[in-house]
Amino acid sequence: MPRTINAVLEAIKNQSENMPIELYQIYLDEEILYLACYPEDINFFDENGNPQTYYAAALSRTAIKTNTDTEVDKCEVSIDNVTREMSAYIANTEFVGRRMVIWKVFLDDLSSADNYVPIFDGIMDAPKINQYQMTVTVVSKLDILGRKLPARIFQVQCPWQFGEPDTCGATAPTKSGTVDSLSADYMTINDADITEAAGYWEHGEITIGKESRTITGSGSGYVTVEYPFSANIQAGDSYSMKAGCDKSYDGGHGCTFWGNTQFYGGFLSIPEIRDVREVG
Image (cartoon, rainbow, N blue to C red; front, side, top):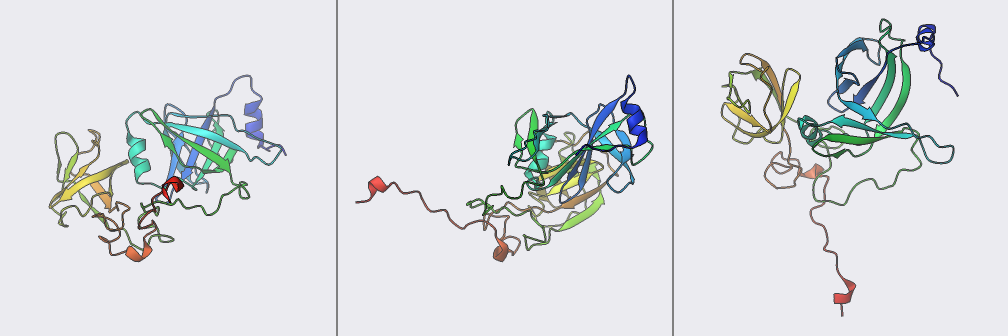
């Protein structure tokens, strides 16, 4: 069944020249990422018709593979990772099973929330990441019969997203405040109101403006992060923090630390694989 588009887009499409770009909506537990495959930010509308900025990102994707047999539609989307920002984000964010939507719009006319063409709507698989980019396979939501059950991996590490109400029984502590000062390398954020015990905020995340970083250490009056904030961050800026978990049962900052062992999602041990040739 062919896609239907409004009269405005039909006219633009039939012009001898036009300027199409793709917009990406990535539905994560914490937030929705709005990205534009374009060198500049794009002001358009979100899924509810509200004005929304889609931030410039180095995106690319494969052609959407369709099949008339039992294989469902899918494509691969790649996001630039040169600054390591995406790898740090993935380490603390659940991508698997989350939704991604791709729209096509035309720079010729972004005045109406109806001026887009839906390209793809699917569910993300486990991301693959290297020093250059993150790649994720997005599969059509029609892929229900092909799911393998059980869907959990036999592993010691807990698979739950810390603070997720449907799986993890713990509530992730949060804190907001104002930056007193930053170290010269922009990796230590100081605030006298950080009074929690040493290590309390480790494995968590701190957000200042539009930048988020993984917290690697904390103590009275400070937190340290995995890699530097940009020079745009200054004393006086507001920040928000969310505590994290090391995904262990009793490894120091996991379920035992948070008093949440009854909701531990991993396995306390994994049996050793025995070679039948050694039995006798």
